[in-house]
Length: 309
Image (tube, rainbow, N blue to C red; front, side, top):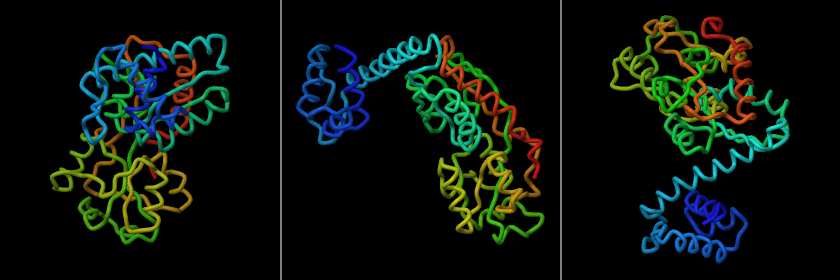
C-alpha cells in the first residue's frame, strides 16, 4: 500500500466512477482499476461494492477512505511545512469558510494574502458549518471561518473569536416594501426571501417574532453575488451581512429594511465569527499568515455598531 493508491481511492470516492476518477488523475481506466485492485489485495478486503448498479464503497472501503484522507492530508501538511520552513515560497493552503464570512471578510483577507504570498497555491472551500467541520476533522482543511457558536466549548476545536456581525434584510430601491414605514416582520411573508442558510438560533428568534414555526429563505444560496442579482431583478428580499451591504446602501443601489418588531441590538441576532482549527495541532506557516490577514481585515471592517445605516 502506498500514498498513490490511497490517492486513487479518494478520487474514486469523490467522482463515484472509475472512468471519471481515472480521467481526473490522468490515468487510463485499466491502470486505475488495477491500482484499486492492488490496494484491495494488499489490504485483503473488498473496497468497492461491485455487485451494486450504483457506485458504493463497502463498509471496509469507507473505513479505509477515512484513513486515506487523513494520511494524504498529513503527507501534504508535512510537505507544506518543509517547503515553507524558510519562507512562504511554495506549498499549498487549504481552508474553509461559511457563506457569511465569504461575503466580504474572507475575500478581502485572501486578496491581501495572495498579494503578499503569490507562490502559495490556495484552495478556499465554501460550505455550511457541518460540512466544514467534517473537512476539518478529515484534515482536508487546516482551519475554517464560520459562526463560532457551533464550535465553542467543544474540546476538539480551538476557536479564535472575531468581532460579531449584523445581518440585514435588503431589497431593490423600487421594491414595494422600500417606502413603507413601521414594517412588521410578517410583511416578508408576501415575498420570496433569498439568502444563505440561517443559523438555527437566529431562525428561532425570527420565527417567534413572525409567529411562524420556522424562518427559512425561500431560495437558499451560498453565493452573495447570486443573492444580490436575484434581489435586484425581482421582488425578492435578500439577507446578507451589513458589511457586505454597506457600500451599496451608501450609493443608493439597495434599500435596507428595518422591522419594528425585530430588536436591532439583540446579540442573539448577530453572527459571531470565529477562526476554528483542531485542538492540539499546529498550523502551517501559510495558514498562520492567512489567519493574520483575516485578523487584520476583521479589525478594519465596520463593526455591527458602526454599520448603522
